[in-house]
Every structure is written in C-alpha cells, then in structure tokens.
Length: 292
Image (cartoon, rainbow, N blue to C red):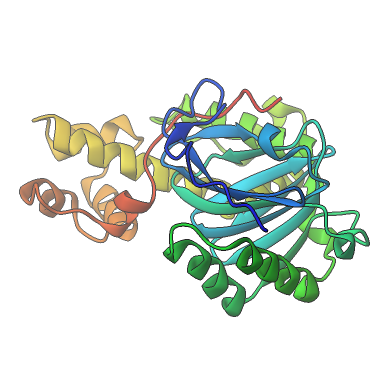
C-alpha cells in the first residue's frame, strides 16, 4: 500500500538565513522515491533544500513571482508558469530576491531525468494546470504526484542557456546592493561597472539574467514602491518624498510613479484603501547578500 504523509509541518518557517522570515514551506506528501513541498515567500530570503537532498533531482514549478534555483555552482531563474529540473547537490538552495513567489518543489529519483546535466526549463500551460490541481485537494494521492512528475519529464527539453554561473548571480546582488544604498542618486552604469571592476555589458547582462529586467528599470520600480510606503506613512509633501529618490521635478516623479503603480502619487495618498497590483506582487526590500 502506498503511504502518504499529511502536511504535518505545514506553515513551518524554512532555513532562510537572515532575511527570510516570511518564507514558509509545507510538506505535502512523501515516499521513498519522491518528496513534494510547497513554498511561499513574501520577502527576500533563501531556502536550503536539505529536506530534498536524499533525492537525486529537483523538479520545481513556479506558480507566481520569480526565484533563483542554485545547485552545483549554476543558477537558473524561474518565473511564473515555468518548470525547472536540476541535479541536486549539497549546495542546492532556492532564493527569492524579487518579492513574492510561490512554488511547488519535488525531489525525485526518476531514471528518466538522468540525461540532464544542466537545469532545464519548459513553459507549458497544461503542466501549470496539473501542478495547481495537485494542491486543490489538499492531500494528493502519491500516484497523482508520480503522474505529474512523469508528464513533466516527458516534455522537458534541455536548455543550457537557461543556466548561468553563480558568480553572475552574486554580481547582480552586489550591483543591486550598491544602488539600494544610493536610492536618492542617479548612478550611471559606467560608474557602477567601474566600482565592480567589470564591463558595462557584463553588468547589464548579469542583472537581467537574475532580476528579469534592466538594472535601472528594476531600481526605478523599487524606488516607487519605497516612495509609496513613504506617502502612506508620513505627512511630508510629494515633492519632498520625490527628492528622497532622486527626483527634483514633481512631474517626472509623478509619471514614474504612475508607470509603476498605476495611479499618481496624490491619488495614491488620497485613497488609503487603494491596493495596487504592483504592491500586492512585490514589496521593497534590501539586497540578499548572504547567497553563499
């Protein structure tokens, strides 16, 4: 008879390092050949995948947000709707650096995955629906989970370009850390690249790989989210708050704010009950530097 472990550890806070207090994991079911976990994060943090290391492979499906899977010195960015397969190792970990994310993780020993040496990715709406369906019942039957794993392995195709060295991941974090500390200034890419002793092209490519957006587009979003918090949390004028984030022109600040949050600063402040898509999906945070 197949045995199924209920989510007795549901809601347990994972080993997430200094900044991951809002990352929680729940074990859905487990057997000799696989373990199924659900993880949800609302702030920056990391999850060490120690509970899955008895298996050879990690199959991860991302429901929402964006996260980074690191193993064997390589990293892969995973966004909503994507599935990634990687060989597990002692250094395997899952990192969230861009705000909220929700993932389904599966440790498995399937021989069908042995052909893959690098992380692999597939965009497949059917897989996404199947993954969501696994959790709808709360306690899925192990055969349902095994069927999902088999289906995923059949359609996954190797994609060496999806993996990048962990050094690029660390570089992107360093770049973000420097910009985060200088929110009130405009730091040219040339200056930032010089401070990190790398080329501008390498800096821009590394940041986009990790964060999924250009360096300054992402920083602008962070500035506007921070400004939104300030608008709600103080009685200072819009122009004063704009100056904190490098804008000495109220019109330019209002346009940037509206591009990110969908409303002007004054509209945002005048409607305390308003909650935007941007604020639900991503919150301002400091850089994750403990990515060792």
